[in-house]
Length: 326
Image (cartoon, rainbow, N blue to C red; front, side):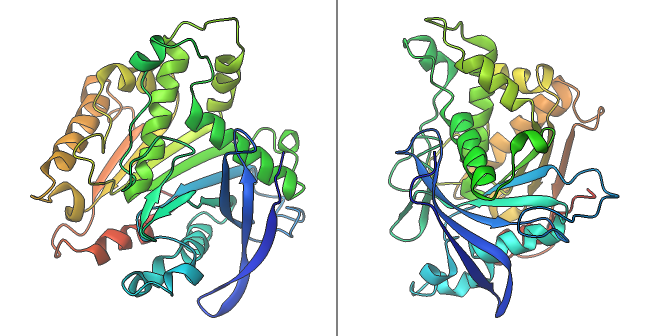
């Protein structure tokens, strides 16, 4: 169901491009709405037709979750500090992603809450505090409850994709089926992290009451081809990276998801927030070494701008390092 959805063509860096704002898109329920910045694959019309028939990946969808400050350009312009980063607005980032992944449908999910017009809070995916730091729903918590409908991040993701494909006249069964790339930048990694918890819940918690939710989510999660963590960070004091070995074992052994990690000194070498670097190191060591994902090439990790000053500009600039060829 799509509740009062609206489409608006947006101006990107002074030029009209095929970037649209889809407002009030329904996720896992009519009460869980997110705005979505949407871009068609290059060389496709507004219905996804007339694409280059020689390519085989026109059924790919890239879903992006951004960081603090990143909002609609119109909102950022009104903020005394955030207007300095208009280059990295959600519209600009969606256009950049479309250039990096020209054969993908791009969906940049706007947080349902921008606290103080700055802090990205993805409450529809994971419970967050006033600064957007997550309170993750884990398998240990779910095991103590009577609810099967616990994979909220996956449910919200599936709902948004279904609503957008319906709104744009793209039937999911015609995409045979869509393959998903999920990208979390800075604060946006909290959504990817909750999805890892969801995957573990699906594979480890005994269903109660005969619900088919976990089976549905398992089939949906099979569409996830790749997950990209971009310079993750937040001020919550922990849980910037998943370090629970059980959760990472599920990712490594019960899925075929490829993992890419791109970081800068701005996050992983920040002495004021030392847990970020420590958690990232443990994350890649468990996946890469214990579960051998480095040698199997399912995990790629790179440090960018190591010889440059650790600043917010280089933090944002990591968005320019993405490419479907990597």
